[in-house]
Length: 142
Image (cartoon, rainbow, N blue to C red):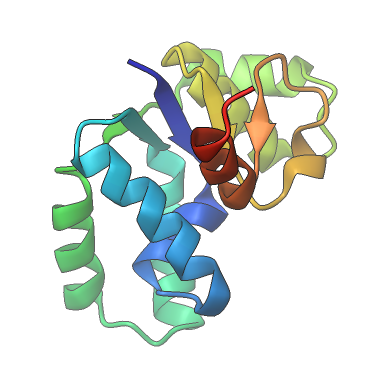
């Protein structure tokens, strides 16, 4: 079964129901809930997400935790540890947070990364797709 890692932006698209970005994220989450793939999200996404959801989307801590409690039943949570940080420091990624996400995904054995910021993962050694590209590939596999 394919292990799909979703980046923080896709995670937040789903939790915050962010406009046009919500439907593709929800479709991916739905496929995972149906057992079509194994989904993984970095522990870093939960921390970053909590801040963004509370400060930018004015979501209460209660609602954030309620959403998280449901979400973690659908996915695995990858770790960010000393090895992740060491690898991220040595990676030629422009953005350190993206490097941590990438190495967290690699440590978990992810087959693919789903993000809306594909350009930030140009140095990745596994496929990186937008949610729309990923869903399109499921419909029309190459």
